[in-house]
Length: 297
Image (spheres, rainbow, N blue to C red):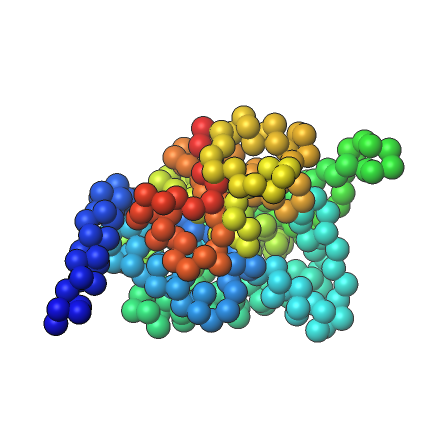
């Protein structure tokens, strides 16, 4: 009995320290983007599911948006379908978008729903096509031509950007005390299926739902400077400067653009953090030890 008492005191102290944070996020919507690279192994997935269930049981309203880039890449390789990237986004033709939808809205989405269910939560898997939750338009992207050092537009194929978000489906799911798990697939006005970058999708959802926080879980500690040191906090203006001077490049650019988009639509702050750190979501929201890079207006 005496051996367990100090441990009990430690646990009680942790709860006391977490209480103000829990009160801050009580009944608030938090959107968590769970990246394909951050999914890692089974232990990491279970930790993530535990975090999401604890958030919901403590009064937070979590919405999970997931990616699946590595899983899509493996399936395309298995099927012998070539894939290319431009501006940090996957160029998507008709054959590729079928695979993307199959992997994202199918296997990955239901796997995450299953993980949450195994930890005692009740989740429902959806995509942006369900209830026309997210309407998409064809994405436009320019890249720097290294030869001429000029910007040129690239055709990304069936890559989409959120054009409008109808929050009624998510409101109904949250009212039923279910945890929405969203695959970033959306349809255009003509019914065409689009592959939407998961960060961009999460930002649109966070903005439309008036989220308190948007967390972007990835496979890096956060935004790094040119010496590979973590930048713990940035303003929107500083983010734009880091893109302009080449510090922020490739796949981090859509993440930062998402942060700016979400903040401009009323999200209080966005955090880019390493999803491979055990219980990264709880550390960020319920402790004084913030993880990753916090971006605010």
